[in-house]
Structures are given as C-alpha cells and as structure tokens.
Amino acid sequence: MKPRQTSSAHVLIFPGPLQGHVNSMLNLAQLLALHNLHVTFLNTQHIHNRLTRFADIESLPARYPTLRFKTIPDGLPEGHSRSGEGSMEPFHSVKVHGKPLLREILVKERVTCLVADGFFGKMANEMTEEVGVPSIHFRTISSSCFWTYFWTPYLFESNELPITGEEDMDRIITTIPGMENRLRCRDLPSFCRPTRAYGEPIIPLDTIVSETHQTLRPRAVIFNTFDDLEDPALSQIRRRFPTVFTVGPLHQHRESRAATATNTMRSSNNSIWEEDTSCMAWLDSQPLRSVIYVSFGSLTTMSRDTLMEFWYGLVNSKTRFLWVVRSDMIAAGEGKDESVPTELVEGTKERGLMVGWVPQVEVLAHKSIGAFMTHCGWNSTIESVVAGVPMICWPYFADQQVNSRLVSEYWKVGLDMKDVCDRNVVENMVNDVMINRKEEFLQSADKLAVLARKSVNEGGSSYTNLDRLVDFIESISQERCLCTGTS
Ligand code: UDP
Image (cartoon, rainbow, N blue to C red):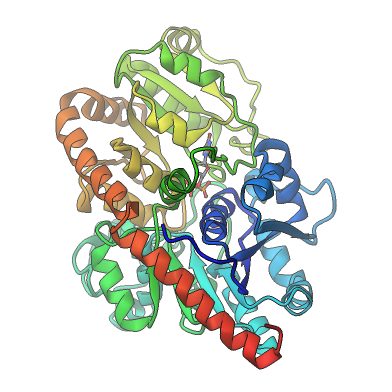
C-alpha cells in the first residue's frame, strides 16, 4: 500500500443503526483511515453505547489516528425496544428525526464527502444537495439484489409482477437484464411477496424501490462485494450508474490491509451483542469439518414451532452443531419457557452447543466447521464465501431470498431451503451438505474463497478499486474545499 500524506478530505460515514450495516461500514471506515483520510463515523447513541460495551471501539482511534466517532440520538425514548421485532424502528425514526442533525454536522464539521447508507438515500441526497457536500451511497446488500430492486418497476410493466399467490412462486422471472431466467418468484426480494414471513418488518416495496432509485443521484455507489462474485448484476449496474466501487469482502479487505500496514493491528469485531467466546474452546475439541454452524443473523425472528423444527432436524441428523439462539429470536408471547422434549436436550448435550452470540468470522474460519446454516444476510453470506464454508440457506427477508439463490444456483456452494421449515428437510439437507455431497460443495466453496482473497490482495479488483475510491474521495473533496474556501 502506498504511504499517503494526511489528507484534507473529511469523510462522514453514516450507517443505518443495525448490526450488518454498522459492521460493513465500520470496516470501510477503517480502510479509509488506513489511507490517512479523516473519517468521522456517525452512529446513533444507542448503537455507539453497545459497540463501546461489546466491541472495544474506543481503542480504534489509537490505532487509526484519523478516525473518530460522533453520535446522534435515534429519536426513540430510552427503554424503547430496539431488538427483535422492534429492530427496524431506529431506522425509521432516524429517517424522520435525523435530517436537521445530519445537516448541522455536515456544515459545522466541514465535511467534504458523505458516505451514506443507501437506506438513508433520500434524506442524504436532500441534505448534501442543500449544503453542497458531494456524496456517495454505500449499499450493504448484494449487488444482485440491488439490481433486482432497481428493476422491479419494469417487472410490473412486463407483467412479471405482481406475484398472485402461492401457486405462482415457482414461475421463472425472465426479464431482469443479466439475470434472465435465473430467479423464480420465490427468489425475488421478500418485499415483492403478497404475504410477509412471521414477524417480518413491514417495509413497502414502493419505499424500497424509490430508495434504490435515489442512488442514481450521488456521485458514486460502493458495494461490499467483488467483481468475480456478482459479475452478471454488476455489469448491468455499471451501465446505469456512472461510478461503482466494489471493494469487498470488506472484513477480509480490512484484515489484509491492516496486516500489511503494521504487524501490530489487531482486528476488531464490530459486534453490538456480547460475544460468548466459550464456543471457541468447544470448537477446538471437535473433529475436522464435523460441525455445522447455525445462525440466522441479528434480525430474524421465528415462532417457537419453527425453532423446534430446526432443533429436531439438527438433532435427528446426528451431526455436531453450534447454534446461535439470540435472546430476542423468539417473538414475544411465544412461550419461551415451555419445556423442551428430553430427546432434544439429550441430543444437544451430546453433540451440540447453543449460545447467544459468537465471533462469527472466527467461527467460520475454524477448522472444525463443515457448513453454515444461514439466513443469508449479505454479511453472513460473504463471510462464509471468504471462509470457503458451504451453506444451507433459510432466507428470512429483504435481499436474503436473492442471496440464497446465488448460493445454490449461481455459485453452487450449498442448498436453499427457502420457504420450507420442516425437520425432515433440515435433517436431509444437513446430511447432504455434511456427508453425501460434501466434497462437491467444499470444492466449489474453496474456489470461491480463493477468488475472494485474491480480490483484496495487491493487484486484485477490490484492492485496486479501494485505491481508486480514495483518489475519488480526494478529488470530490477538493471541489467542496474550493467552493467553501475551507482547505
Ligand atoms: N454475527 C456475529 N455473531 C453472531 C451472529 C452474527 O458476529 O453470533 C455477525 C455476522 O458476522 C454478520 C452480522 O452479524 O457480520 C449479521 O449481518 P448479516 O448481514 O449477515 O445479517 P442481518 O443481521 O443484517 O440480518
């Protein structure tokens, strides 16, 4: 990496107040700070407090002298539930209350470039255009889903949408450029469906589509992906969006750049939940590639019945498992304290471990892990890709339906359980991925992992794109400096 002088650019990074969004954008913040850009990371107070408790972020400015944190209130009363079914509320609340606060920070802090979560697209565009600050959108979802969202209005024009009901779900979608005949109705983002999953946050499709089209307004868009992974969607996006930077997988990119910059850089976990690290010792005592890691991310909620189907399927498969069951994963009023059948208790004692939250990137890299049963949140998907771990997908909402199709049909690194949660299906899929088709999936996953690592090493596409992004931020920041006389 070229050593750089400290820059006059001041980048404000503004993520949505959710684990996956903060995680990837904080990785980007560290990468920009490694290039000596001045970076302010703007969190809600609630998220900042949790990061301070669980992720040791207060040590980051010592390691990255040009990085600092700033907070705004999320507008919700103290004690208001911000987890489980209430997870999206801070997002909506910041959209309503955050505008004047963002405006004030852009002006007072002499920000020369805003990197805003695309989910705040409209608000970010209005504020930056009003005060004359150049902006870039960061999309935390897969570029394939972003492209599908973008194309949704044309699916209505070509009568491929709406979806009329359950019997329609296997109908093939033929007209998404670059992705023709690859997605079925059930693989479209969840917001295209006439019904919602259990506990799924209500976000109207119109809102999602108009936020996506807002990304035509800023100067550039950043994706946490790499070119070899999502070429069909990316080549289409590049025709419509003038400047696209693919700089992922960001967690791996940060890790490899930090290692190059100094041997003393420890990685930070960016977790807003307390990690139970006891699982690492448990994994150490398990045989090579014998454990299936199960996690449905930070937002998924499910009924007790669904949880029991997973549990029976895992125990009946006779495979060892490490399962993250968050305290807020079962919806309120769902009888969390009901007794658990003895065969599940015994089967879990023998071969399983259930914990509240784990250091996921470390877990996926552990030699005892043979597969990942995942909801296919984009961070989890790309973390599994980097680790070369095959997946069993049970998508919950948003981009996860598209991502699980990428896993099963494009990359062929796993199976897609989509829309089914039945103990027999769980058992059979676990056995297929862990035993019957193990070599086939491992080989494909290994190939993808090699490409992922190559992309963030010197000369790789994401490595080069990050350097281009830094130059781009420097140049648009100059415009801001010149027009306000603040340089
Ligand atoms: N994660 C973690 N420990 C866990 C479960 C999840 O650190 O026990 C992290 C995971 O590594 C990922 C993030 O939480 O970076 C979840 O983001 P993702 O996009 O996969 O899903 P979301 O939570 O947004 O649905």
